[in-house]
Amino acid sequence: MQSVWNNRYLYLFILPGIIWFLVFCYQPMYGVLIAFKEYDIIKGVFRSDWVGLLHFKELFGSPGFSGLLKNTIAISLLKMVFGFPAPIILALLLNEVRSSVFKRLAQTISYLPFFVSWIVITGIWYDLFSVDGGFINTLLTALGLIDEPVFWFGNPDYFWGMILASDIWKGIGFGTIIFLAAITAVNPELFESAVVDGASRWRQVWHITLPAIRSTIILLFILNIGHFLDAGFEQIYAMQNEMVLDKAEIIDTYVMKVGIFRANYELATAVGLFKSIVGMLLLLTTNFIVKKFGEDGVF
Image (cartoon, rainbow, N blue to C red; front, side):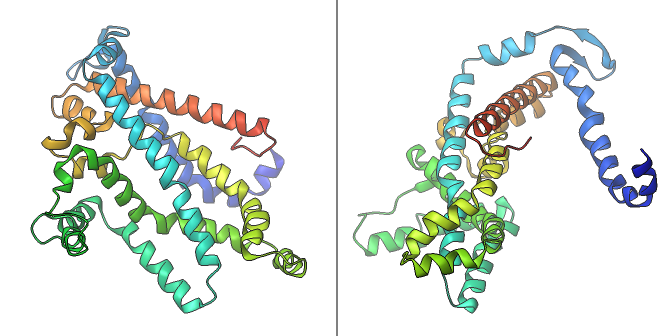
């Protein structure tokens, strides 16, 4: 305590962050009670009637819940398997580029989509894949790969691929910055020793670069796995339409339509609590497994 008092002015710098967490993260947590009550906006949270697990039974018993869960897990799994390694691969490729001008240019171009909203991104992709003069259909037709334009956004079989591709395109630049920063911290003498021993560039990447950034990869993977059921509300809500709804409806869009638009706040809260519990269990399990293999976990 004496140390805290002696550095009291320094601790004032973290005060705004503490206040932010208390107001926006911890103070609203009492609202999870809505999931166990027949919420009446006039009575308020504490005076509303207690119904226990009724809303969870309604959620899990609804005929469309299995489809929602399947779509959410499938999209999240695709993003985890293909989307998570994408920034790592790009960072490794950029690290091998010797031209600093080209490297900065490539980094800037890949980073720009991160600042664009999903509404704008969706508009760009609709134009690119449009049946009427879209660049992709025009290119594929010219190459003879297709006989007639494909309605990409109206075919459920293509929807998950479109979601994955657009997610990688938008987020790959931001993730690359993190991994490039980790790569720059690698001791250059390790690479020099590898060159003397006759190691190829691939061997240097595999035996030096990747092991050096392994802790960063594991840390980000654990943090991402905690949001596994967050399949990307903004992206999917902007891209979905009635023709692909069987593959495009996820838990978050269902909550928006049923919980918010229909004022079923109890169901929306129950879904949010369900997702939080699953995310916490996944995070704890992954962290436990990682530490069992001798790596540093999040905690």
